[in-house]
Length: 66
Image (cartoon, rainbow, N blue to C red):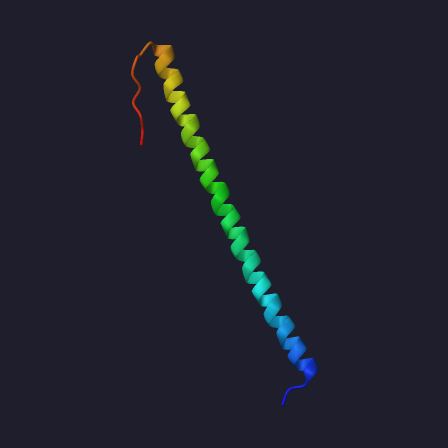
């Protein structure tokens, strides 16, 4: 039979492990979101550069990348 102290220690250990797992998942999610925003931003910049180049060269149509 375990003591109340042992139960508290085990419970704290479980809660600590769970909090660490939650924090790791939050950090991974935040990194994924940031990477997604960076990818979207780079695509916008690329599209703008294509449009600017087309405008400067006098072209009326631009090749759009999907």
